Image 1 (cartoon, rainbow, N blue to C red):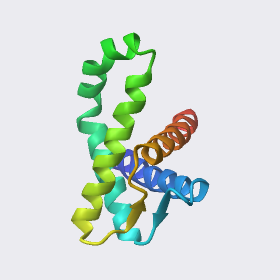
Image 2: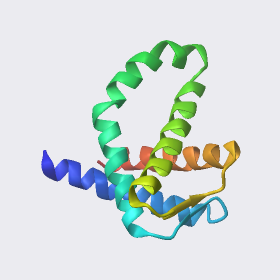
Image 3: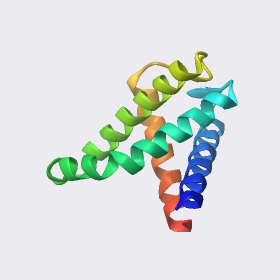
Length: 120
């Protein structure tokens, strides 16, 4: 169980690093401590809150043809990046603050996460 959580944390860090390489104009990593904080925070949110979020989102997912899942991913990315920068007390993860940047990042992270789930 602990190895699975550590593996997930490392994969989340790798996915964000790859996303910063794919979208260098949108996201840049200046501090790897903040990247670690982001990975831990995202893993905890996925373990603790994601089942509840999926349950609440189920009717909206069918009504919006899956668009609500992308919007929830945008919200999670916004929360985790800003909160990890706050916890690290330095802006280690810099993202351009507009909705389109978060949307592009959510799509790239979602695709990389899909590939991660295929491998896992």
